[in-house]
Structure formats: structure tokens, C-alpha cells
Image (cartoon, rainbow, N blue to C red; front, side, top):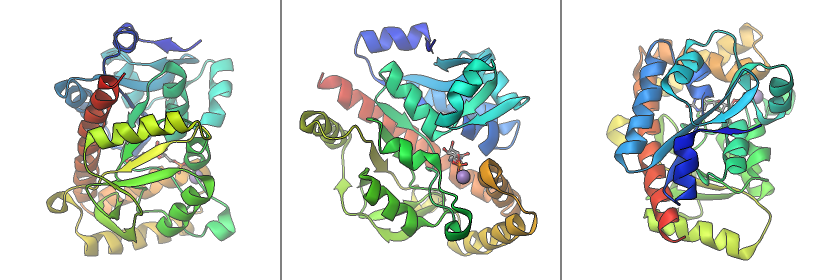
Length: 302
Ligand code: PSU
Ligand code: MN
């Protein structure tokens, strides 16, 4: 049922580095038509580092690992493309739906295909006001049960970051800062919260992955939190102001469930005149590059 592209299959068989990429950021996280350019650019960045990109999505009910350009265009068009968390996968398969995969669905399909390293922008997590809404992204629960390394710029700053860090601790998901002792803040280099572990090279990350396997603990993820460079981050004052407006608009318009994250991200892009988009892209680019290097270090030792 899982369709792994020939290029990805060959790379995995030859133990060459492969990096999984999610598709929700393309279909629902970035404005059109910039999103297609970004999807292509991210794949090219993985290749430049000597790894094979495996963008993941569901098309006509078939989960796909590795998309060709036509398939990427379909996802980027957004037409009839649902947002799929991991719980939605069987429903999308059985109803032959088209859908972009979130971190949770992407991580699950990547692990099924044997891809160990995954790059994204920011993870989902615990939303502000979660005590009322109970809105916690399914990303967290899935990462507690899936052996994959996720390179990200922390969790989205629209979330309750300390609550999300606490949930990751409770769920037993390993978290390390890359080249930093601070947990990154997605659009910002520093979320204002520390992180307990720091790794400084792709080789060190690969060593942790090997130790995870050797210790045979629960099959949980490793989160490599890679900050956007300070000179590329969103102005923290602008970020605080526009985020506050976005959260108020979200509440006023009664947006709930799956729609919350795209709503807030879209509001930030407009409210910052595209500056949040630039910071988001800088973060994702950095993550994709680092993920390719980690995948290479991982493949090297095998
Ligand atoms: N990071 C981004 N843009 C996004 C997302 C993450 O830079 O659009 C997506 C991811 O796919 C993540 C999802 O898994 O948002 C979380 O959505 P929710 O909060 O509904 O679980
Ligand atoms: Mn949610």
C-alpha cells in the first residue's frame, strides 16, 4: 500500500542518506504560489548536501514517500488537499482522498518506509488555552511512539512552549538543542526556555540515534532543535505584537481544531508583511541542510 519512489527505494537499499519532508507546510502552511517554489527548493537543498529528498503525502488514497514534480504541484495547488494527521491516514486510504501529511503522519509513513531522518519547520504542540480547548497536536503522541529523528526549529511559537516542553518530557521524547543550550522559538532563535542537552555536530546526532537503538527503549523520537540564525529571525517585538493580534482574531472568529495552526500562521504572514514567512523559510532551509548532514552521518556508520 505504501508507495516508495524508485529513487528513494534505491537510496535506502544502497544505504545512501535520505531525508523525509512533510507536505502540510506546503499545502496549508505557506501562501501560494510561493509554496511550490519552496517545496522544490527544499528538495534541491537536500540534494545539494548529497542526500535524497522524500516528500511525503497521500494521493488518490495512496501514501507516497518521494514525490515527482507533478505530484508536488498537486499538493501545492491545495485543491481538495486535506490536512492529514496520523489518525486520518486509514480514512484517507479507504476513501481514496488526497491529503498533505502533518509531522505526525509524515513521521509514521517515513518510519514505515525505513527513513530515519525527517526535516520540518516547527513541530505542533500544546496550544495556548489548552486547559479549555484540550488542543494538543497529535505530533507529540506520535513522536513518543516512533523511532525517527526530527530536525526542527523548535515548536511553533503560536503554541504554549513551556507546556509543550513539559509534555515532551512526560511522553519521554528526547530533545537536544543543536549548537545551543536554548530551545529555539521557530521564528525566533530563542524561545526563552532552556534545553537540557546540546549536540554540536551531525556525527554526535547520529551517535545518539545509534544509542537509542542499542538501548532498545521504547521506540520514541529524537528532536534536534536547530535555531534560525539570529540575523534571519523575526523581530521579537513585531513577533509578540502580531502573534497577540492573531490569537485574538482566532478567538473572535471561533476557529478551532485543525484550522487553528493554518489560521495563525497565515495571520502572521499578513501581519508582518511577509517577514514571518522569510524567517519561517530561513528556519526550514537550515533544518533541511542539517537533516541531510545527519542522514549522511547516520548512513556512514551503517
Ligand atoms: N511547521 C510549519 N508550518 C506548518 C506546520 C509546521 O512551519 O504548517 C504544520 C505541521 O505539519 C505540523 C502541523 O505537524 O502544522 C501541526 O498542526 P496541528 O497543530 O493541527 O496538529
Ligand atoms: Mn490542534
